[in-house]
Image 1: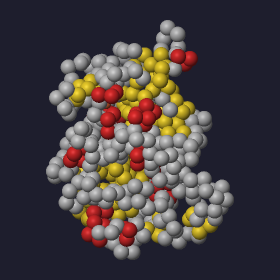
Image 2: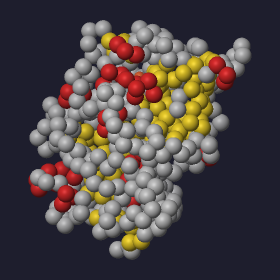
Image 3: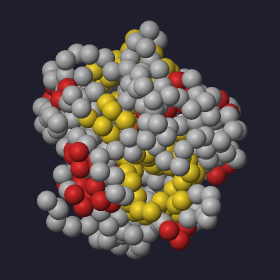
Length: 197
Length: 247
Ligand SMILES: [Fe+2]
């Protein structure tokens, strides 16, 4: 059934799953296709000339049975340490990274702790990175956020909107091995809060 | 904290996503969705700079052969029906989206992907890698050249085949516009049989993912053309909307 057209002109193109071979299209150099001068798009959030603290973020994507996905792709977008987004960000700060899940199901990228970015009403938010998850079996890319540890679960304007207080913790990373660890649970106990923004 | 301001004509927030045009997360006919679909409702709130900004890629990103899947793997020509795919990327307000990055990937003419986990009987083509990319110009149009992919079987039901398709990944100007989808070919009888196509609830939305043969753009004795227009999310054009400054 056609939904009522509440849009001004056109309807968005429908999403379809990224399928099992999303790495061919988006991370070809990871799957044996030497393309684009050997550099995948989004290979580095922090480029040449970036000066500042660096932290490695690692995580997994886990399905409703507890199985770890190896065919997913995770993308990250965030502000620099001053809360500025490219093209107005610090030199060498790209703001964008993407990673496939490796043989152990781990995705990773290196970044820096972002500054405060305003919520839609202008209130500052705790440092966070926007994440998108694409994979076979995911019909519309899943949008979520990873917050840096120490987020105020009741004070952050976005986190405070999550009705079940314990679910807010699904969006906060923990410190591990000198970096940050953030697992994304697609379904079931501890299901990550996903966003429709 | 930034000052609030009201600027007539400034861009507003992202228009709420029309969920009815997208597949639901859970669709048992596409079996992998059963364990990979969130069960709880997503959280909505008005977009802010985190969703309204996005990575900007310059045309200097592109290599000479990036948009030519026929030759971009080895320099030699891939086997299969030669096609050009063109179209316009617009947002929901109807405006062209210049500088959008499109990444595409697909099976070869026999329906085989160059991937360790694709075990289909059809042979690999030594000159076909299966990925490419291009960007839209100032008028929102894009073009790439490739070979028409073949249909292929996939493990789902006992006998499921994918229609011929090309995967598309798009970046507009906002990260909230991010879209991954697939393009189908006009007249392919596999389209109504496919459980992945079938996740889309609206037949009109499937029709909009179906490229049309573009006879006028066909290059005689060389390459046929298919036309595939894409719509990304838009932003409200609302004067006097309260916005944090500098957006
Ligand atoms: Fe495919």
